[in-house]
Amino acid sequence: MSIRRLVAATGLLALGAAALATAPQAADGPYVLPPLPYAANALEPAIDARTMEIHHGKHHAAYVANLNKAVAGLEVPVDVEVLIADLGGLPESVRTQVRNNGGGHANHVLFWTILAPEGRGGSPSAELAAAIDADLGGMAAMKEAVLKAGATRFGSGWAWVVVTPEGRLRVSSTPNQDSPLMGAPWVEVPGTPILGIDVWEHAYYLAYQNRRGEYLEKIWGILDWNEVSRRFAQARAAQAK
Ligand code: MN
Image (cartoon, rainbow, N blue to C red; front, side):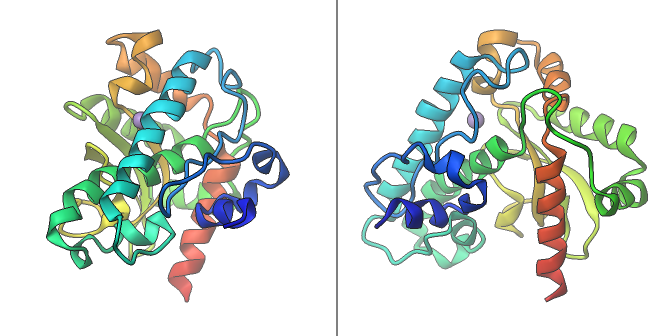
């Protein structure tokens, strides 16, 4: 499989030549760890380089490796988002492994792309801004809701902004590596995530220790609204079909 095809399989082709400059790791299975779309130190001071290196190169890499192990010998879709959207269609013997590691892979692919160096994240598109106003009470209320969802998630998990099947925006939270893409009965708020914030301790502990709220506040300042807007438009377009 060519590098271009491998990168396409992870849905990251849109990142273009910069992402292709670093070859993804050789995969022992259908799923591949995509390179970070920026240097490990690009998000400092919000996220330090060491945290990024371990988070991407060890944690995310382990989800990919364990996912490949779990699906060995099975016919599976190469798009991990398609895979985790049909957990019920998998043999029960691998379902939990795919839920945890497929979710972990998909969630981190999203996470890296919705972050950008400080000052480079733009602002929500007019369409997204209108939906945020209509469904979530505006930007300030959305921020408060997302940060609260992240801060109050007990243990490990994620805070999300999701486009529901009805086309509305909702803020939610999942435990562990569950993704809104998994749908019912796996998650409370099914839908297409357009923004996701990792609140596992591995995402912030080196720099913030137990101060999850401070990490969340800093993360809010490095969100890539261009990418969140693109994902919103894509989710709406998919629903219109
Ligand atoms: Mn993580």
